Every structure is written in C-alpha cells, then in structure tokens.
Image (cartoon, rainbow, N blue to C red):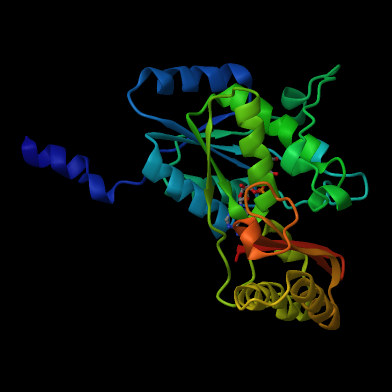
Length: 298
Ligand code: PAJ
C-alpha cells in the first residue's frame, strides 16, 4: 500500500507550488485574509501595478522570508497618473504575472477592478505632505503622491497586512508610504528593499520596455552618473557643483533632466554638506518619451 501511495503522490520536492488564490472582490479577499489572520505568523503585502519583473519578484522573495502568508496586489491605479501620462498604454500582463507569482509560492493575488477600488461616488483622497512635498517627483507629477497615498491606504485597509514591502527604486514613494502608514495608524511595518538592476546598472522598471534599442544603450548612464556623483561628494567636492556637473553629463548623453538632487536620506530635505546627515542622490530624466527615475545612497 505504501508503495502505491508514494507512486500516486510524488515526494514534496517534485510538486508544483499550490495555485495562489485570486480575489477580484472584497468579499473574496476577506474570506481568504480571515483565514490567514486566524493562523500563527505574519501576513506580508507587496503592492504592484503588474507587468512584473525581477525587481518586483525580489520584493516577493523578501516577503516570503519575513511572513507566513504573502499577498501581492496587482492594480494599475488610475488616480496616480496625470491625463497626459501612460495609464492607457501601461503594460498589462496578468497571465505572465500570475505564473511568476505562482512559482514563488504566493498565497493570494488581490486584483480588484477599477470599480471595486473606486466605486461610483468615490470622493475621498489622502493628501500626503512631508516627504511628498519636497520638489522632487511632486514638482513634475503634482497629483502623483496623492493618488499613490490614497490607493496604498486603501490597499493596507483592505488587506490589513503586518508588513508591506516596497522598493527603494521609488525612493520618495517609499518615504511617503512609510510616513502615511505611521500618521494614519495603519499598523503596517513598511520595509524597503534595494533596487534590482540590469548587469549594466539600469534599474529594472516596467517602463523600460518603452525604450528604443538606441535609448536602451544610453540608459545605464543614469546609474553611472549617480555613482560618480556619490564618489565625488565622498571626496569632499561641493554638492551643488557635483549635481550640476552630473546633470550636464546626462544632458550631453541625450537625457532631458527633471532633477538630479542630493537630499537627506530620511526627510528628503535639501543638504549642502555630508555633515547635514545621510545623503541620498535622486534623479529623474527623460530619454526620448520615456521618463526614468533612479537613486542611490552616498
Ligand atoms: P510598481 O511600479 O509596479 O512597483 C511596485 C513595487 O515594486 C514598488 O514598491 C516599487 O518600488 C518596486 N520596484 C519597482 N522596480 C523595482 C526594482 N528595479 N527593484 C526593486 N523594487 C522595484 O510603485 C508602484 O507600482 C505603485 O505606485 C504602487 C505602490 C503599487 C501604488 O499604485
């Protein structure tokens, strides 16, 4: 009998990970999370807009090491895009995303429709301040962090995770969400994970697919210039001169620079010298029609 049993049910290491539950409605989400909450151990949430790449998957892997249950949300959030931005053309690849999440043993995929997230009559918005109003992304995308904070506050409330994993790739977003979760008593521990990069240094992004072959070849300059700027600041060069030189080099490479700035790594306030505290260098620049962002610690 034992033989027949082991023949029919292969050893654990040969079995595929179980299918994640997919919830599209709050009722189904609640059903699954109620069960997870009744268990011992933490629930982690990784929020995404889909089009998953190795950067997103690094967050999921990290979540797996910190929590018993891992929930990934996939929602392309209309309220964080301005009218002229790429909401309509943003890549949507649910089948491939689902397969990747299944392979990593994710427990639940939360994929609400726009009408579930924003039903008719929806009229409330979270307006973050502090790190959301420091003249970086907020200067060029004025309504962006309002949209991000609103949807992330809703996702935290819907899922009620113990921890939430965000990428340092979107460094200002990480600071805004961390502040928002604390200020609104959402009882979520927000944890940042380092940026995953291509071998040539380009930060992985769902928007990299927009780059032409020729733009893709120039794109790694963004990270190289950040590293050069960090090294020069550490060598005692004046910060204003370093960031001005870095921006000029990017413009020579064909970028249109929105900002290249040295900021306090926690508050994102401007800094003039390493004595002002830990420094983060942040950059946003357009290459053709594609807007890229990146940042590194000094
Ligand atoms: P999205 O751009 O899909 O990113 C989802 C998460 O993946 C974010 O925490 C982001 O910082 C992280 N991420 C993206 N590229 C990364 C990389 N190369 N390395 C490490 N982490 C990376 O950010 C959003 O979606 C949205 O604003 C969202 C928070 C989901 C709210 O709508």
